[in-house]
Image (cartoon, rainbow, N blue to C red; front, side, top):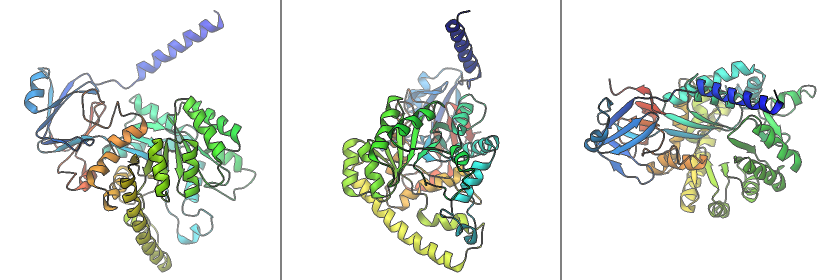
Length: 453
């Protein structure tokens, strides 16, 4: 057999195998009845509401009388009583493959990045198999809390997030739909320092791809593309040049991939803007002039209010004994951080820049599942002064646009994938309702139902 013919036969066989193992699309029709349905984009509320789901798609939305009239005779009815329906939540910035336990003060003080680095190094040193199983647990817990789609932005080993993404898509494990970024692109000296020189390259290559010049910037994008990633994540610091990041963006866009840039300080944010990044993640020190530039260029800001409202104390106090000095410093830092973040939120809203929200969750939160911890972080935006409807947009319709998936998710309307959650009360009145999701449907499959028998 000719080599080309043999390759085509192999490729067709592989595709047939993939289709055979793909997650089966539900064939039944489901009619969901609820007290209210919130459209995040318009703020409109339909009451009472009915949604017809056929397979994994939404086909009808309207009043119960109208939707019932067009539903199949054998439709399964789920009566959620007075609940409020919303689109499935989207966490646009998370790290499913990390569960960092903060070390005691004495251990943290021994490292340049002592709060984060020891836990990160332990994760890198774990076997990839063990780590992906951790990721599967985190993913399932996210889904159970109503997070039906995530963008995993780094810290997953070489191919952990792409492998988990495919396993979820094929129905092997349960979890949110994943946009995977593979290894994070960094400059030298980011995240981990002072490693054993005999081992440092091997350690770093398990987690990162190094940008060292324009040619290297293009090459590392291609290395990630080899693992079929969905997005490129770059961590920008003052060492990253505009030319290097521009090369990353150009190469990624050639591969039809968006570029998300971790940038907190003014210099790094400007580098991201000048290079034409698709989103600036965190953006804590962004200036009003930079927000205006981002609005003009259509660059999203990915807000991550993770440490708002004393999060640090909440995750450390149950696990370690905090010194009096650390406790006092943490309380003072929380007050300063909250004040700065309140101001950031107001400036973002005033600027008209596109925004979405991510939990940036990578921490072990005693007493909470990963999903519970993630949603708590996301609703911190309300405490920081963002109107409840804008918070909901940040984790539904806005987030869908950030991902480039606004045609598939982020709204409950005909043609969209059937990602639907329900809460008991009104999330516009009390955004905390998002922390008590009672019904979760993803891709037409009921994942959780604490309402209807």
